[in-house]
Image (cartoon, rainbow, N blue to C red):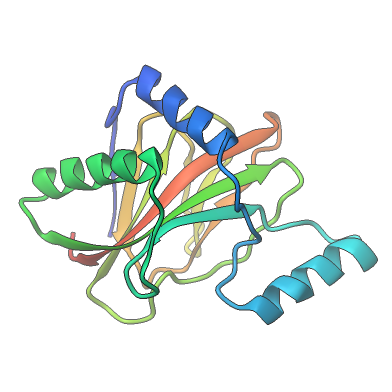
Length: 178
């Protein structure tokens, strides 16, 4: 099941979030595995392959990561608004991953979690022609203020914009159901 919620945050707040993202260090290639990051760098430099965008992890309960940043407050507001709309069926925050894609990025299909009982939320902070694609060929174009909710074991991928140059989004991984 894939659901969307529109107009979660106002335009002015989305701009504040993007401003924080632009001024936050520690962006990295999107992978949990250091060896995979080296492989990505090798592909980009020596095989001229596209990048997979960049990721900024500001919270991960499984790794005891919790950066002292306003970004986490914004992400919590998004989470709690959605939790309220879903009558507390969405339970606990597992992680916050902020994503950045330029128009040269190319991502692969993946699952945020293999097991059932997890919900992924993709929040879009601005309009662009990128989006989120699911393996069943469903594509949801990035729309400012929109959250996309889906079971975390669904194969999906971020899609970089082509006409616009940049895409920022937030991925929240939670326990629960939709």
